Image 1: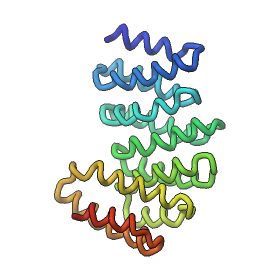
Image 2: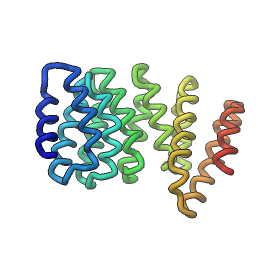
Image 3: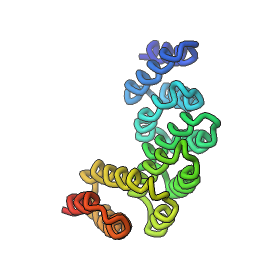
Image 4: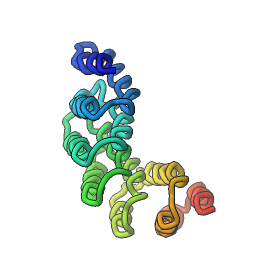
Amino acid sequence: LEEIVNAFMSSLKDGNNNVRKSCTKLLGVILEKLNEKQLENAINALVNGLKDKYVCESCVKSFGIIAAKASEEQLETVFNALISGLKDEDKYVRKSCAKSLGVISEKLNEKQLENAMHTLIDGLENKDVRESCAKSLGVISTSLTDEQLDEVFNALPMLQKRDYFDSYFNALEEISTKWNEKQSEKVFNTLIFVSKHSINRNNDEYKDRQLVELLE
C-alpha cells in the first residue's frame, strides 16, 4: 500500500491533466485504508489539489472520507484550505471548495460551522458559485440554529431557493437513520421552522410532500 500511495502522490505532479485527475480519484478510493502518516500526506496532497482546476472537483468526495477519519487539527487544515479556496481566481476551484464545505459540514465544530455559513452566504453574490453555495448551505442547515437558519433564508436569492431546499431535504434523508431521540426532536423542530419558509413563502407542493415524508 505504501508503494501505491507514493506512486499516486508522485503522479499528482504529472504534467498530464488526466493523469492527475485519475490519481486524485484513486487516492480517494484508498483513503479509508491509510495509516496516520499516509493520511496526513494524502490530506496535504488533496489540499494542494484544490488549487488545480483540473483535479479540484475530484477532491470533493475525498474530503468527505477525510472528515470522518481526520483529527481536529487535520480537519482544521482542510477547512481553512476550503475557506481560502472560495476566494481563488478560478471559478472551478471556487465551486469545488463550496461543494466540499457541504461535504465535511457534519464534522465541523460550532465556530467552523458559523464561519462556513457566512462564507457561503458571501458566495451567493458570485454568479459562478451561487448554485454550489446554495446547495452547501442546504446541507449545513441541518446543523444550524433557528437564528442562523433565518439569516440563511434572508440571504438566499429567489432563484437559488430550490437548490437550497433540495439539498436540505436530501441531507436530512441521508442522516435520518442515524438520529437518536434527542437529535430527532431537534430535527423535528427545525423541519417545522423550515417549512414556514419553504411552504408558506414559495407555495411549493413538492416541498410540502417532502416535509410530510420526513416527519412520518
